Length: 353
Image (spheres, one colour):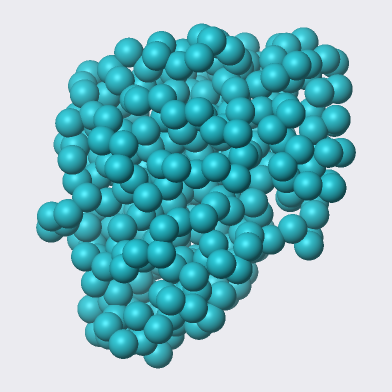
């Protein structure tokens, strides 16, 4: 079973796991990455984490997501997390778009999906949850990138991409990272400062808009304007600044659990084509990266995990059939993780990052 799963850890995490295994009480932070429908390969992992691994959690777990990762993690913090996750899974799976949808159509249908995912009282449940503490990142746009006119926005994005090639710090000229945080602002990432960062407390009034903003892909979706409680502006996908995360965490005892799509960690959205751009080693010391093995991926339909190109490559029926198979196969990932934990085999299976 465990050959479907890869587990890698930074230096501090590696030593702890080899000594102690990976009890859920040893996790302080859990990350959820951007990546569109790639998240379907993690649905089985999510269900096992919600329903088994973290079910008796007593101390706070700080959840931090961007884009699809934020949507996933918002489910963890609702009262019936498995039901919320099911609503997200099925809603995302069965949402149908026209052949060439514009940004208005995609945004409108995604807002329906996000509203259904939250249900009648999801926002309040998230705010009241002192154990699963939900946080997300969105990017407030500057200059041309504020525009929903494609040519202007594309021009701004191109300038940002050029600057980013030289240094991620140049992103501060184009975006302000915005951390929408749980009302308890004690998360270990609260003081992140490697990019210009604003902090806004989540509330019932801004929950839906913040979740939408975190997943509002440039050009493909409309930006979310003037979110309640946040500085006025146009907010877009949090993956722009933090696609797979590269930030300093305090060197405490707790580890960072990161269920991911693959081994590569891409710091920001513009770094996807920069093969040499990697997170700083010192930022990964407490990280536990869990992802599907090449063996599992090779057995998926088309030999790959889902991605945004599937919307154009396949008809609606073909895409649903394909993604359903991935969801089914993803169950093996969650089962393998629990087996590794419960048997202690994780001590031998874990590898260095």
